[in-house]
Structures are given as C-alpha cells and as structure tokens.
Length: 230
Ligand SMILES: [Fe+2]
Image 1: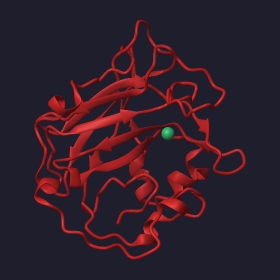
Image 2 (image 1 turned 180 degrees about the vertical axis):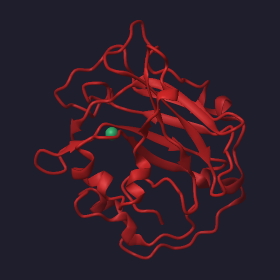
Image 3 (image 1 turned 45 degrees about the vertical axis):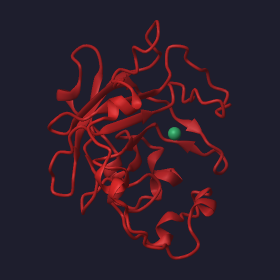
Image 4 (image 1 turned 90 degrees about the vertical axis):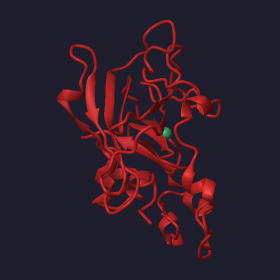
C-alpha cells in the first residue's frame, strides 16, 4: 500500500508515544515479496477462526451499553469492492474499560463483553457487525487526556502488504477535536475516520446504525490511525 513514506508523517509531538515509535532516518524502500502482495486470501476463517459478527452475544447475557450496528464496504483505489477479506475489531466496553490485563483504569469490566470480533467481507465488499457503543477513557498522554469513543479496526485487504490499522470515531463527539491521536491525522482526512449515523443500517427497534466505508489505498484512502497518509 505504501512503498515509501516520509518519516515525519509518523511523528506528532502532541501524541507523545510517537516520539519513540517514529523513525528518525529516511525509510529504506524494501521491495515487497510475492507472498506479501499476493496472499493469503480466501482462507481467513481457516487461519483465524469463524467470523464473530455480534459482540453482544458472546456471553450468557447482554452487555451494558447502547447497541449499535456498523456496516460499510471495503474498497480499493478504483472504488472496486474488496471481497473476502477480514476486518478485525477491538474496543472498550460501555464504561471505557478494555478487558486487556494492562488496562487498570478504575472503571468496571463487563462480564458479558469481551470487545473483540472479526468479520469477513462478502462478494461486494460489505461487512457488518453488532456491538455496543464504547465509552471514552483517560489515557495519560497529558493532564486530563481523554480518548473519544472509538473502535479499533485492522484490515488485511487482499494481502499482508495492504494491512490497514485504524479507528472509527463517532459523529458529534466533542473529544475528537482535542484528541492528539485523532488530530495526528490532518483535516480533511480526519473526517474519513468518523462514521455517520444511517437509519438504513439500524436494526429496527433493536440497535442504532452507522455507516463506515473503508478505502485501502489511493486518493480516497482511509487514514491509518495517528498518521497522515503517506
Ligand atoms: Fe483504544
């Protein structure tokens, strides 16, 4: 997807940890190997297990929080659908707490919510999953720093070399404009990370619906989390 990238695109001073994560020297262009650009494809369920499209039904009871469905298409730079590719999902619960052992923020875990799933696009590139709206959480980047509500996504596209890791934000969240991670993606590209409410995506009388299309490369590319497009 990005054969060359200027190193400065990965450093955003207000997002402190990019100081350690970003390269300090020009990147070396490493030719991609055949397996990186050609596969695997069509075998995600065999590699990673069956799809888990409903994060609200993974335990004995329903999790706390507002049920939502997020749906959209995965597209390439020509607007063509990317079929049969995996979209991995992970998120905090409605209180803003991850089940991860390193998350020790004082907010309740939800025994009925793991916060992880995966979906596989259909022949037309469509994906859809049901979950609960995640809560905001503090993250220690600076005094009183809060992450806006978000859902993490990882897409592998047609091959490993097209991997995209990013985050979905929700419309009208006042925390987006003061969040260093969201703001590491400059406008107008930042808006591509915000889903939109869509009445046709709702599940009637059950879950609110949001639309979020993902473009893997090209001028309309969905940005990586925390970086400008390369
Ligand atoms: Fe997060």
